[in-house]
Amino acid sequence: MPINRDPSTPPPVIGKIGPYTVFMTPPATPKPPESPSAVSQKPIAQPPVLPPPQQFKSVASSEQGGSVLGFFKNAVTKVQNAHSSVDDHLVRWFGLNQSKYQWALDEYYEGKESEMKSVEAKEMPGKVQSV
Image (tube, rainbow, N blue to C red; front, side, top):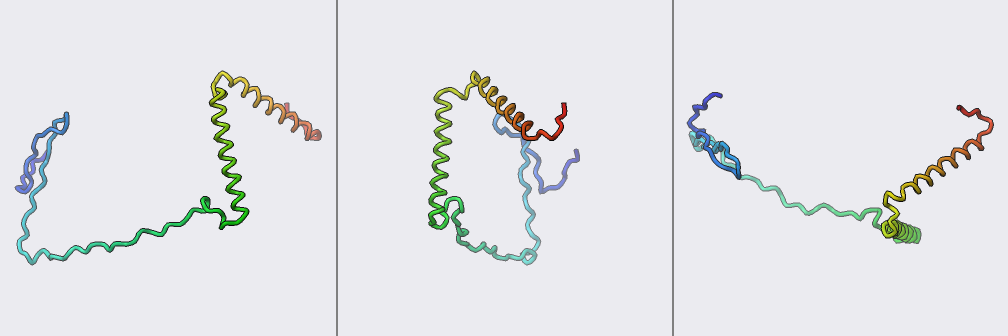
């Protein structure tokens, strides 16, 4: 590692940060400018203060312009959300989401699959089935 012989950079100092011992390099001292005219003293322009952006109502939260259709749509949505919430609470209350009832769910879904396959086979008697 080369040694920096620049006089503006001080040597690192050993210090502690929490439980760690670290080398801390102090910031370099800046060299003063040779002449005051070399550095132009422009005032720093502050950015203008702007008002916050305009807020728009979301389409989902509006009532479709106050129409009857919008009223019924919102009512149906609220009923569906309440029904879903009640279903979840009842399933938890009766313990139907536990693994000891998994066999009943598996049997139900297997029955639906075999029923769907038998319906498809009856609907297409002209086609040859692959075995």
